[in-house]
Amino acid sequence: MSESSKELKIMIIGSSGAGKTSFVQRWTKGDYTEDYKPTIISDFGFKIYEYNKNLFRVQLWDIGGQDKSASMAKIFARDSHGCIVVTDISINENPTEIFKWKEIISEESSFIDDDKIPFILIGNKIDLIKTEENKKIIEEKTKNICNNYGFMNYFLTSAKEGTNVNESMKYLLDYIIERIEKFCEDNEQEFGQKRKDTVKLNHEKHNIRKMESDCCRK
Picture 1 (cartoon, rainbow, N blue to C red):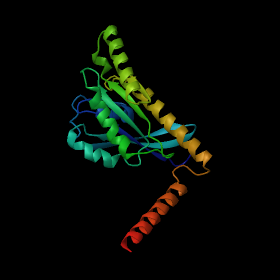
Picture 2 (tube, one colour):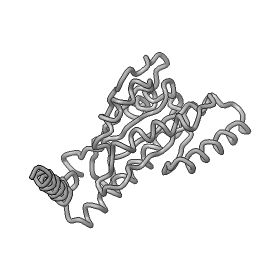
Picture 3 (tube, rainbow, N blue to C red):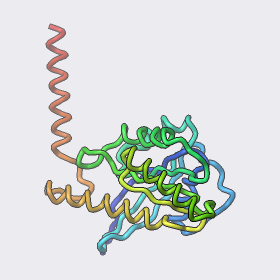
Picture 4 (cartoon, helix red, strand yellow):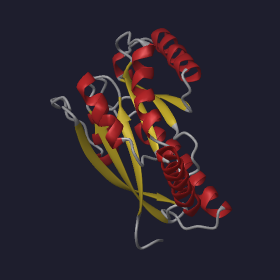
């Protein structure tokens, strides 16, 4: 087993009251509290995750669900490896509202391979849905949102009871780690190493802009 842990940064976003903080608390500490105060801007939790005898320090950034938190979410999104959008399935939340939060993070982040970071959709508070018929209706709706708005997968969870919390995190983290390891192997670099080609490209772009600026002043 590795003696030192590698860092992974996961964003937790969604509308106020969806259960983001409860989700983080359930996964990081294994417990649940009824009287959480709403997250104003952001909160933070972490947990050591083991994958193939290697340790990863997973940072969970819980972003407040108020509209004023959107600008801060853009800042926190930088250098993130993945994102979870949490929705409250006990209410009829507008899919465009869900997509709005996803786009905020997507615009400000990119994966190590310069492609989009992975997103999963969490339909939380499944414990409040009492009949199997209603659960099937909600699952079909959540599945459609997942497919229509570019999510990698979806899970129906209960942060209160712990339903599918560990399973959803395992799914996302395993995917992220495997994708990073493949990129590092293909490009012969260590986990966490900065991309030399990206640095070189940015330097070249800077020189080109400088040359164009100097040309325009002549």
